[in-house]
Image (cartoon, rainbow, N blue to C red):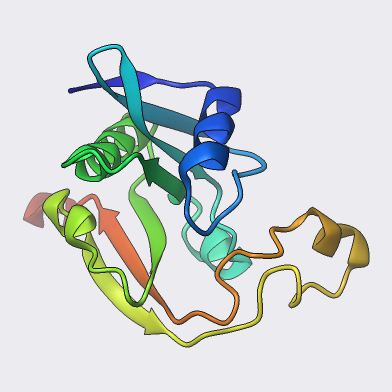
Length: 163
């Protein structure tokens, strides 16, 4: 298998056809795909963190807002590893993502990500948005009503950098 760049249109089409509980992302900063021969088997997209608190506190943080595979073994781990390598090359110092609490996170751990926090279920982004114009643009399915887990990977400071 190999990793390749991808366009937003390609990523959206793959997610629309293959993701079990989320709609395609609306926007992004960049994305990657995994191929097995001549067949695309997975995509990952990254964008600015949805949480304004995270955007303001750590501006060099990117959020992986979608990964999706056709079930090919190890494709998801390859996606998480590749998206972090691209993010670091672009100057990001931290990447975050969320999973549903009932998902194991094995692909994230295999790619070096760490479980940070368990999050209680909340309303969907659409339901929790007061501005009707913005609410209409948000995914009505999403992860509303589902407990989630926050994951991260970051550049580790060396002793010399910390001093």
